[in-house]
Length: 233
Image (cartoon, rainbow, N blue to C red; front, side, top):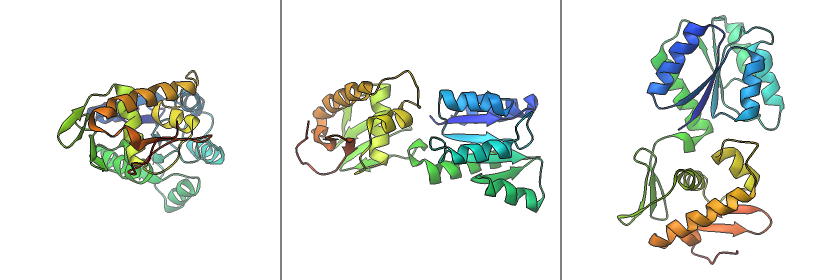
């Protein structure tokens, strides 16, 4: 489930967006101004932000520029949703770092379509299409993992961890990167937590002889590979 932060000071509009996003299967957090939005981003990094331009205090444009200038939020997907409809405004919004720009009044169906489009470009792991790596199949829609018809039972965290690995195969991910992307950048979770869940994931994958797909890269982290090479513990 993708986390969407909606930054909108008009409560009726914020609630309308929230209801539609939740019905579409997204987890939604609301913020009425830039300060609240920054607190939410500091707490848990969302998968995407729907951002109004005209906010109390700091503007949405200023907030977008600040996020683009910070390492942690540089790749944070942003959709500007604003009443400012002039071409110059759209150019300013996109130049400030927005990935897309939608003007009010707006269609909720169009907003949902644009959110899905940005997530496809920025975060393919957040979508509900099945993933197949080396015969291991993960279906986010049904939350099932299987190989050759044999189902693997996983806990919620192991499922999210495997989903991330399978949508980013052959790449090495540090423990801190995995915490950011799988656990949602929660500051209170220690890096050794990753090791515990990787161990559980491997144990579950033994049922279908796929435990060796999760490799430990000494001094760097973990990666998922289709190769059957022995694990470096």
